[in-house]
Image (cartoon, rainbow, N blue to C red; front, side, top):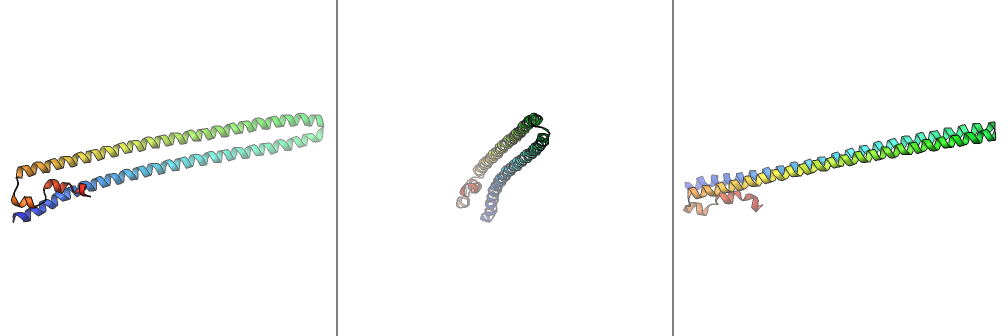
Amino acid sequence: MASGSEAPERRSYADVGERVAGVLRAAEEVAEQIRADAHEEVAVIRSEAEDAAAERRQQLEQESELLRREAESYAAGIRETGDSYASQRRREADEETRNLLAEAEGQARATREAAEEMASRIESGARRRHDELSEQTRAVELRLQRALAGLRDIAAQLEELVGPSAQREEAESMVEALEVQRRR
């Protein structure tokens, strides 16, 4: 009769160990999912920043090309009215084009640098978030390990209080039941 009641006790202790192991697995899965989500968010933000920079660069190049064509057309019209006047206007138009091109390139460079800075800040933030999540995961794992150690201590104390018996010597101890995780 006593051995029948000990079997449910053993299963109960084994169940506690399995539950603790299940909690640990769930915590690891959640931490991995959070890490994956953070990496995915960084990739999306970086891609959007790169796309915006490329689009702005293309707009500036198109504007520059349009300005260049307009300046050349204007210079051709002036050339017809006279060589001296045309030479003067061509120099002014070329100078204006160079300035506009230099300005457009400066704007493109500034836009690219701003996008790179933004991507760097986003990546840095994502790294910080990843580190925070890793630290939180480590803290949860430590608490779970401490809780498991506490359960093992309680099981050992209970076995000392209950005392040894001939039937219990044949059966698995509570401490052994809590060591399910170690056997896996």
